[in-house]
Image: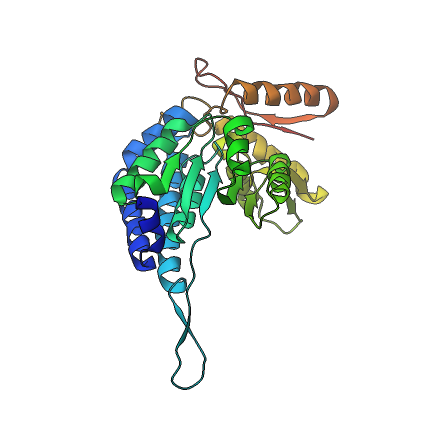
Length: 318
């Protein structure tokens, strides 16, 4: 009953609830920053930025819904009134990643909710506590509990079952291209018209010509490649520098990596925190071992808090 009431209530009421969630989230920034540091290994700077992004999502989708999902008057004969009313599609399955366990989770969920859908939210296995805190906050803001349900578990079991369920009208997914293709095939096999909104990874390059300001280049490289320990779909992977300025840029990158503090994410002076788990650590460490034998080491940082698990120093190879 609660979920039915959610879907049919005026969009302005749904938008007001989502906007209220943004206010509550902003007021609880310290608590959510602590959760992000403890569970996702976020540095405090990255955690603050992520909470702000989640707040922005709540405000943005509330504003967009209030402006653009209102009934639309259509032209018609004199004496006749025609109106277009937009409504939700049904149950949306929201499958979110561990690298932005609050911002992307909240963005997917509130966008689906404010449009008049109900949501089955499946967060990443590595970050269940952040997702639970976010869902409880949305309930507190006024979202009915049966309009938003949280389902923990692995993507191979819980995620696959949700995607294949007959009640599913659409899927929001952020993760690997490989998994997005699997979801796409599963939805296509259902024989029904189901929506897939997918955001996947990339191999991101920066091309630097001879006119670039080296200080600006190096600052952008370090911010993009190594914040969140490089665990972003938008993170810089490949830097291409014109030969006339390459040596100087490389030297500056080397100096910048030496200055980065790699350690415990709860310390205010930490620049780079740990990788998300042991599996990620071993996978990247294996690639580094391969590169040390196949490529030329250009620059490498160092670890500052040896007792923190899954730490890797920033590194660059040619």
